[in-house]
View 1: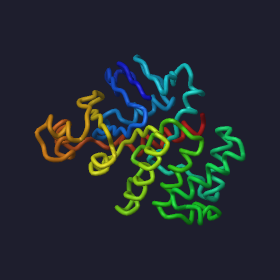
View 2: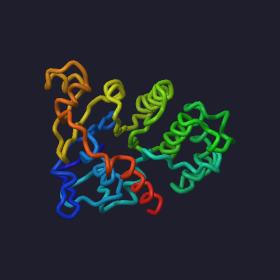
View 3: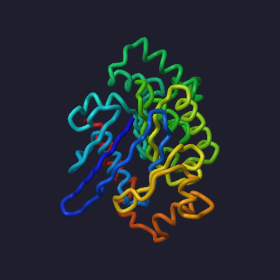
Amino acid sequence: MIRVQNVVKKFGQMTAVDDISFEVRAGEMFAFLGPNGAGKTTTIRMLTTLLRPTSGALRLNGLDPVAQKEEARKQFGIVFQDPSLDQDLTAWENLDLHGALYHVPGAARRERGEMLLRLFDLWERRDAPVKEFSGGMRRRLEVARGLLHTPKILFLDEPTLGLDPQSRNQLWAHVKRLNEDERVTVFLTTHYMDEADRVAHRIAVIDHGRIVAVGSSRELQERTRTNSLEEAFIALTGASIRDESAGPAERMREAARMWRRR
């Protein structure tokens, strides 16, 4: 469903992504993990048509996101790390607007929107403005919105950052159900190792722009002779604290602005 082959991305003399290759299978929940500044966000921006790779090849459901940008965008939904809902619109209006932008017919928008709002436990609040929602409700609505146009792929960048454990568990339960029922391929990033351990079928670890390991949580632990995914991650990437001056939040705010201007 996703293929990345020998992809390089340079910004001037700086190489952000350095000759990476991996594949994500159809219907898979795939976690993309790495320290701050490792190249995760740059990779997502290339996959979601916001950046052009310097070299290499990308495919989303067989489509080239560089040469077939508009067709490729129809294949995926995305939830950015930073909020992107219209706070003054209701939950239903946010979904309806998204559906209109993706040219989803009115009847299909209504049917799909009701199904998703019920699934994410938001149907009773469909006419309430988003500014009245809790953080967990907003995140569930963003995921529902990203799925309204029935994409084949769902990109989730730190979707549970700042949520309490109950909200995190609830959101992942809903995402896993859609993954199983609709075979939606999920590409996620998270700094919560327990989430990746629990929901991901396979995990890719990127560090300094390079893929350093790909496998299931168990396989990564066996490779590093550790007893948890967190220990395996540290063994693969080191224990030093990375510079957060241009961390994920800042980069994804820029990505969201670019996406809205597309």
